[in-house]
Length: 117
Figure (cartoon, rainbow, N blue to C red):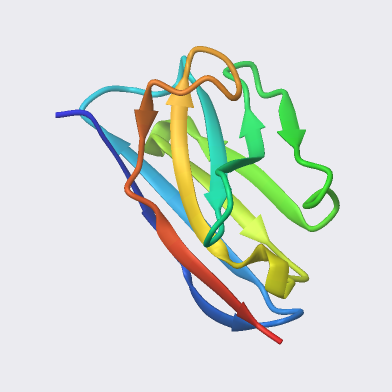
């Protein structure tokens, strides 16, 4: 069974940091683009960041300079380091994998990130 499992979410004060992890199982994801999306209450899901299979990195403007995506293919894991968090970063964060950035065939179950002001 192919799975992506996120972890690392939680409650943090504004200005704080969290590191999300997404561990893949059931197949190797080293040939996939890996993405992070998020969905805030009452809003549509939005793209946050992606790393292509060749290592090209993409960020949404809203997180550029604050978030850092990385991947460890040996561990079949992708990370999202989130610094200088703002209340507007509050959302459920989803990991995804697909053939190219922003196109996902596999999704994780999501992890809640709450930033208090």
